[in-house]
Length: 230
Length: 261
Ligand SMILES: Nc1ncnc2c1ncn2[C@@H]1O[C@H](COP(=O)(O)OP(=O)(O)O)[C@@H](O)[C@H]1O
Ligand SMILES: [Mg+2]
Image (tube, rainbow over all chains, first blue to last red; front, side, top):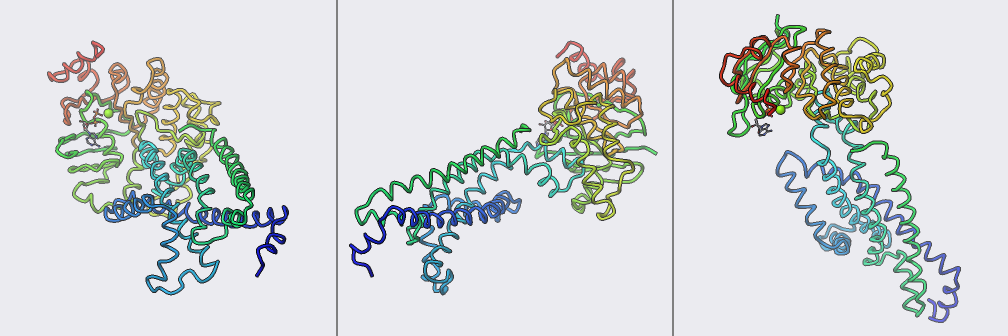
């Protein structure tokens, strides 16, 4: 254990602060990456369930989406982290820091999958019926129609909404601190507690740069799909 | 043997009876024109032939083989439907080209997909001939040489509709259906589309043309059907139905049309 003064000496020179902030921002990036990786396909699955001809499945799926979108992500993170313990399921998420991170990641994936599912649904339903019918008449199967005709049109249609959502996700990753995940803002608050405010303010720069990179990527993607009109 | 026979076709949407016992047949190499006012069921008839709607009653025969019988309609699997609808081609009023593909790809896509499955999937046969070469020929036949690499949004409506015709022809359907192919076009663009349809008539393509172009129907069709409120009111040669109609409803329709309404 450090005394307060020791801590200050050890931890508050500029390089150390930058190093510790950067290191903790890697957690934000990890959470971001894992969330995207799993919620993008899961969202599609939920979208298909919501559009299913099997009425109970569609209703279940829509209700689920409504609950998830209708409650704060922060609360979902807490519930998912504590639920296994409260329900006596044993240490479902493992233990320690990795358990907290796993629980947060699961909560983020579910939450974002629900948001993405609604964007997908809008995109899929926005493709004119004539496209599907033209493809059907040409003897294409349902999977062929989805992958060869509909999908790219859907991607082009939803890109602006997806870009918004993905940028929101970057900033949402800091909510993980509610279960003591030492992401960048939580790390910076350690300094705030010791009376040093600039590290907290400077976390904004990390988010800004990361969002900037994503914005450039999304713009490039939109440009790439500029060759056709929907 | 008739290329197409339609027997007692009935179709309702909810309580609206849209087709009320349609019977007709079509010989190989003949062009049938269907005329009739808006809402008379023409589109629904073509959609039934292409399995986009399932009739409630009646049957459809192609080259003597029963391909649809409403009695068995619940037994039809998606694969059956797919195999059977390939007897027909359909050109829509508003083209429905695939926007992300070039003219060439729009024409070749479906056939390439079928080719890949030929032999593996029941009922899917390989069409003879080279896909690319035939597509180029079709594009040339449509007067679109040089547009192979254009995207649909870069084309006029008339050009898009001609691509849609080439796309339908690429699968060599036994019967090609047109649903008012010129009515989404500016008047100055209808001529180019009607010209290629006329070219197909001259090549003895078996066709059903739903159209509001009465003069065109009189010129090119071998047979004309006048539909009203889901029934065939009158049919015969263009000379009979269009130039010398017998039924009051046909006369009224044609008078309204020649008055430009
Ligand atoms: N999917 C549908 N659901 C309900 N009614 C329909 C549907 N399709 C067509 N109809 C009705 O069927 C009638 C015939 O329509 P349609 O076949 O499009 O006629 P046409 O092509 O001769 O103008 C119209 O009254 C139309 O409103
Ligand atoms: Mg119509």
